[in-house]
Image (cartoon, rainbow, N blue to C red; front, side, top):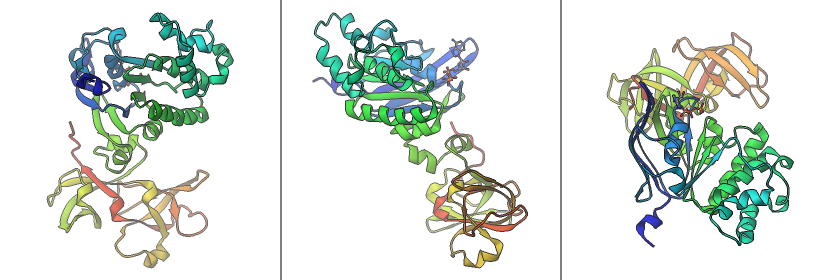
Amino acid sequence: MTSAQEHGGDVRLTGISKTYGSFTAVHPLDLTVPQGSFFALLGASGCGKTTTLRMIAGLEEPSSGTVHLGDQDVTSLPPYKRPVNTVFQSYALFPHLDIFENVAFGLRRRGIKSVKGQVGEMLDLVQLGEQARKKPHQLSGGQQQRVAVARALINHPKVLLLDEPLGALDLKLRRQMQLELKRIQTEVGITFVHVTHDQEEAMTMADTVAVMNGGRVEQLGAPADLYENPRTTFVANFLGTSNFIEAEVAATSGDDLVVKAGDCKLTLPAARCTGPTATGGKVLVGVRPEKISLAHADDAGRIPEGRNRITGRIADSSFIGVSTQYVVHSPVCPSFEVYAQNIERDGRLTPGTEVVLHWNPAHTFALDAAQDIE
Ligand code: ATP
């Protein structure tokens, strides 16, 4: 086996960009997707994720840069000569052919006569072995999408590209299909590059997520790492909700940083600060809502030592089923509001109640307040 075959499923983009007239849809981008990984391009509508995917597929010509699949430079190859296949949101199944023939299509086009074994295997992989003789319109949306995946995999591409493949499905089916696609990817072991605007989808399925914003990859990492250590407020807020407090580095204490926000001192692990760590450095301190506990001010004495704490007043509350979300205004950090879900007293706190928000310093991160991240 040559090294090109061994690494055939790596996707390497080098300085790839796309401009339409004076508009830059994708700024020069370097990106490597390792063979066999499940990679998600995540971002809001218009951020350039589909354009990036289409440049990998060969459906869009880059304005600059190169696309490598393994060791092969495929930049100037047409789509059908690249060892990739794409699954679109519109399943694009042939309505007049049954499921078996839809999946067999790619083999038949290559002149392969004996297709039964391979098609059967693919249908089993997507758990549609029983539906082989049905027509697409007789299947549910999720089943049709699975046929589209089987059809795209039948020719053994090295990379499968998925462009919002679950976008047309309702929420429940979407969740099921996320797990299903992840299972299929693990089973076949090829590289999947998946485009989505749904952060939960990207986090559930992908080994690595590239968060795109304005034609750039703003941050790339494992889902948990992105969630725990976002480098910008955009990434922090795209992957959930975060509270932010404007603060200034006051001191270093062992492996910790102490920062000051008004009269309030907060501690965090220095390793979780991607902003300046020298005294006087301006940072944005972040803490996820679910990490915060809320205590009635009268119970403040019972809060364990060593927790970060902020006093405030309940401004608003809303019942959301599993918990109650609170908005708390804090005089020490005027710009700070919090949606806190853990409450240490029974019953709902009414607006105006004085409270103390407290959390483990280890759950605190800090960003560069200037946010000039390339
Ligand atoms: P969506 O989820 O809405 O598809 P996206 O993140 O995938 O969004 P792209 O489809 O990659 O975004 O588009 C990126 C930007 O490039 C958008 O502003 C879009 O309007 C623009 N764009 C895409 N194709 C063209 C084109 N053929 N001509 C001009 N502008 C285009």
